[in-house]
Length: 138
Image 1: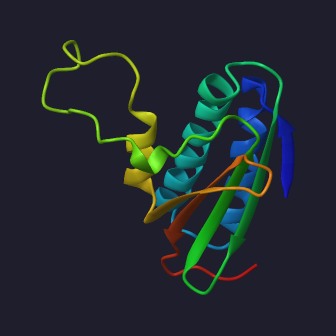
Image 2: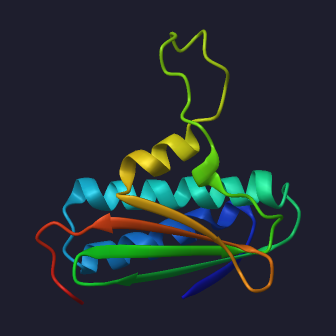
């Protein structure tokens, strides 16, 4: 488990934590990249939108079962369920699209399952799952 303050300067620590676990599982590089990116987007959203760049905590737990790497990201920011956000409109050119709004899209794209639940302390837990292709158990 990793527990850090909700400061953008801690994103590298979060990325490294998830990456080292995924690599130890023997995940293919593209899937390591994907689960790290999805986790980074979630943590960034917590810092910027959840805590609104005010002090708070982010807890990251990485585990696995027989088929998946599972990343649990917990915070005490106001309740927000990213699984309810509609997909972005990708039909226009980059110049025509509004800035931002792609983080949740990337989380969905690079994971096989994304689950939100409200914790017993009225915080958030986002669970990201990615199937392990040909991996090993640490």
